[in-house]
Each structure stands twice: as structure tokens, then as C-alpha cells.
Amino acid sequence: MTPGPSQTTPDPSVQGEGLQDEAALRAEIDAELAAERAGRSRAGLRRTGAVLLIGGAVAWIAALTLLIDKLYLLQNPGASLACDVNPFISCGSVMMTWQASAFGIPNMAIGLAGFAIMGVLGALMLSGVRLPTWMRWARLGGMTFAFGFIHFLAFSAIFVIGALCPWCMVVWVCTAPMFFATLAHTLEDGDLPLPATLAGLLRHWVLLTLAWYLLVVVVIVLAFWAQWLAVLGF
Image 1: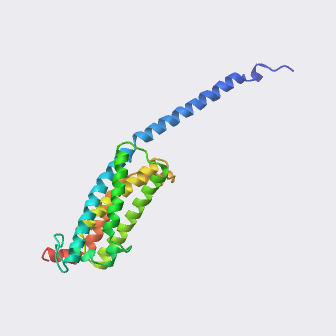
Image 2: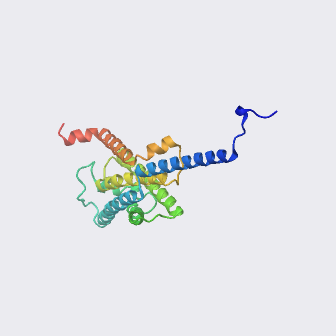
């Protein structure tokens, strides 16, 4: 029985062309999506490098100032520092506690080394240098440690020591955007695969930094409410 007009066998060459067209279309869509993601990058190489360089430089200066002040207090017990504003805003009250040397050496020394390294990495990134894989992971690990450590120090200062160190808070302010920008850059670089929803949230590093600032301010205001009222004369 010969096949009728409706039973014509498909031409393999036509099928092959159709598959090629489909593959080309998919490749084009993938390229457009990749370009769109790159165009909406929130933590690009140079932007993150600038954050690390500027934040590392400012935090390094704060750590150096704290170290100089601590050496001055050790040489002059009972002396007052310029940042000793009142009983609960005082560098001296904080830096002479055991928390200021939590690892057996002054935290300032750790900060001087760590922030210097991050500043150098930031300068390289700002110059367009793509760091090796191990260095990218070390960068994220270092910033994660720093961000976690300032939470320990902040909790100790607010709820245990009961005093705020202005230069310490400068370090807190610098560390937060450095951590969130590094995390966002690591996600955009593809080094840290996370679910799309979570990754999309963590890429908004500026908003996360501002939200963290707000949280810390609220905690400080509430924890020292009585002291603020006393300062204001109520």
C-alpha cells in the first residue's frame, strides 16, 4: 500500500535545520539573559574593589588610632582620650577590657593586618584584576570572619561593657558594606551557588547594609535609652 499525501515521510534535512534553528534561538536567548544579568550587576569587580579599598583604608586608620590610644593608656594609666566623651561614649572604657584582646593580642593589630590585606585586594580589583579562585574564597572568608567578629564586639560593648567606642563604631560602619559587597560579588561571579531567590536578595548589598545600620542604631538607642535621656537633661 503506497502512502497517501497525508502520510508523507518528513525530510531528515528539514528536521535537522529545525533543530539547528531551535538551538541557535536558545543560545541567543541565553546570551541575551547573560548580558542582561551583567548589565544589572550590583557588585561588579571594580565597584566591589572600590568598596574594599575605601572601607579598608578608613577602617585601617581607625584601628591604628585605637592602637596608638591603647599604648598611650598603658603608658599613662588613668589618662583621658579625646574620644572619651562621657561614661557611655568612651574608647578607654572599651579598649581596656578583655574583649579588646579576645585572641590574646589587641584586636587593633588584627584589624591593621586584615584591613590592609582587604585594601590591597580592593586596589587590585579596582584595577580590573580577576583574583584566583583560592584568593576569592579567602577574601569572602576574611570578610565573613570580620563581620562576625564585629557582632561579638558590638554585643559586648552594648550589653556587657555598657559603653560605646567611637573609633570601634567606625570599624563597624566600614565592615558591613565590605562584607555585603563581597558576598554579592561572589554570588554574581558564580563562585557561591545559592537558590535564585536567596541570591537575588543577597545581591542587594546596599539595601542590606542600610538595613544593618538601622538595626544597630535602633539597638543602641534602646539599650542606652536612660543615658540618652540623662544627656538631654530629662
